[in-house]
Image (cartoon, rainbow, N blue to C red):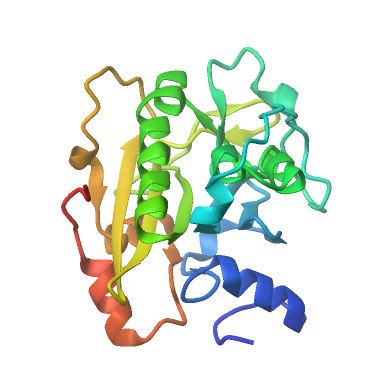
Length: 253
């Protein structure tokens, strides 16, 4: 078992988790994040907050081949049957003014119906403003899939930021206590000519109008870690961690 983890998993579970999470399963560095549950699936791995009824992070390993299918989207949102503690339900979002925003996108699963359906579990959702979810966030997801096709594969980390420094904050809630994030992050890592490289985005949970300028929302992983209390890639070599986490990339073509 990698050092620094409290999760008690068997070898098969660790193998699935490591397959989705480059550099190891993310580790909490902030004790105030409260009780959480780890959910491990073939399509993604996430840590779910019982206090906020949101994923703290979602890891994916996305290969180009899995983007070439034609499975229809069924929009079959449902509560996650594998959670033992507090959770959200599809009706919690009704009348809230927020979309059920995928963290691991349904569009990343185009060949396996089960994996696509599992992206609609509510543990993978967070409240997003409609013009974020259906606008610039969708553009970012599409751009990310373009990078998967270009480089053949990508690792992705996605999740909410409840508030930024100074903290603490008390986010508004919807439904049965689902916290509404102030921001969302997405981190993408690809291997370019044998060298890993990363780019990270942080988008405010607000209304957006065209034209969309993704380059305005690039941040470092270090910045995201400070705001979330999460250590990404905890088991990667230290020199690589420092280099990847401090980088603020230009927008990739």
